Image 1 (tube, rainbow, N blue to C red):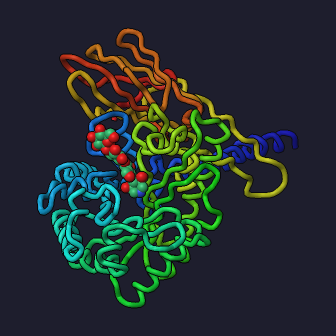
Image 2 (image 1 turned 135 degrees about the horizontal axis):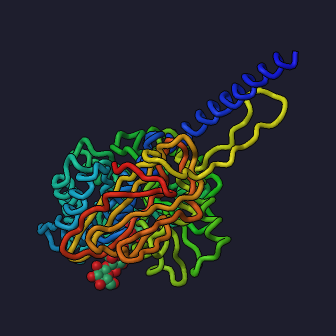
Image 3 (image 1 turned 180 degrees about the vertical axis):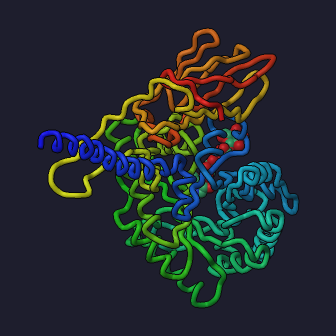
Length: 484
Ligand code: G3I
């Protein structure tokens, strides 16, 4: 009897553990499939996640590495504006924008064209054109620019910021010389110039449907749809102040989408007084998550673009004195709490869910993940030099946990073969002694699920001379990794 009981126990208890570990693996596998970049997370639900970028910053790191690894859309921040593209009448300069287009294409990113008709950053000569010629000057500009970029632009901001806060039309050269019809004229010309590009009206302070401006833009789009003026989209710039994302943002997006157009979040940022308090950084994390949720809640919302990458390239500090930290990355291009919450809200959670028992009665113990401690093949490292110049270079390191145990806290070691030195590292903490490098996790990227690849993987800028070969051996928590 006792022998029989003991034997049963001998099998039943391990079986229970086996079932538990199978259910844990299912959870972990689910987590392992979570996206590790904003672009991957957005793509899972068909959204493009973009950033406004500047041609003269391409090549800078970590800026460029972040753009390439986190985003799958770009908007030129200034390079496609009239001031740059037609600085004198009939003389076109597409060089800076071409740089962005070729960068985007070589990284498989979508391009939003910004912007064809706008009162600001307009070439000075336009203001001296006789009123009777402004319509043809506007149409010529649209046609020339769209023809140059034909086939390469996903959505164009055809007309930008044409309304005042009270819903009246902004007084500018186009409104004053052509009249109310200029916006419809611009869209009609744009459709003819590149029939395959989607055409947007783009503005700020239209995210709350109760505002007079939002209602005026809505009425215009409604009338365009009724009369056959070609419009495909409204861009909601979304230059927010921390804690003030309108509660009805999703409802506003849906209201516009119901007109039969796409809606896009085109210039997202969320500013606060600087230096930033942790309360505001946390509120900002909530704000970014709410924006992601608003877009995900509207099937025709297919793009979220942030207006820049990090604090150094943001327009905010230069425009609003004492304000800043409006983007996902901080002054050192480190991801902020907003990055993590935005990624999570997009569905790219790096958090391992706590497993719940599938049957009632009693609680399931939550396992404490233990670091892997030895043995070859329990980790895999992919080291990539993404950029190299004069004496500097940028690199990223992707770490995969190929073991069947979750990692909670990691330390990666390797040796540089040619005396390279890390000068700046993100998504980790580095110590370097001679050629020997140790990188450890930060507070937000310590976990690597079994079978999963680290979210927010470390990257760095370094210096080199002579030769810049990649390290050939890595250990993770003492275990030798395969080099992918
Ligand atoms: O290129 C010159 C440089 O030669 C000069 O030394 C420097 C000194 O002022 O200015 C540089 O030009 C600046 C330009 O950005 C490029 O950096 C202009 O001063 C500056 O006014 C301009 O600001 C741009 C702003 O539009 C103009 O309104 C921002 O970069 C750009 O991000 C911003 O973008 C707009 C969107 O197009 C429309 N929605 C609002 C958004 C934010 O203002």
